Image (cartoon, rainbow, N blue to C red):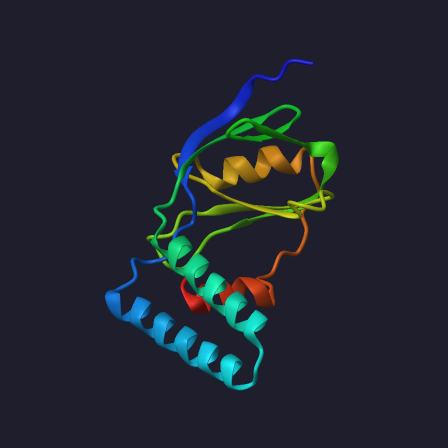
Length: 157
């Protein structure tokens, strides 16, 4: 089957706002307080987990968003070099945000265990055209922000 691109664009990961030095100080103070409590409760292993987790969180927060290449073909969606076939997808929805600085996004629920939800920013194309094309291959489903999505947004990730 011909796998030529119908829609193709590049877009950044949906990235949070830049964090100030105060954010990193707050992370360090909370992590230090948790480590002290863990040591006082004689739970050294948890203290080590808190230290590793806070360092990982700080490194992820400082990371710049990557630019990905998105392509919608007749057989599925390609993100960089990974192909997601329409037959492995359950349903989709297109989000348009009230905040004009955030691009519209294509939300897809998949059957994959390791990537059950894809959220693809739509840049340089009309979201209605993307909606119409994807609706030929997938049913539209109800997509709402999960608790984890809200928690990640609240923490600034």
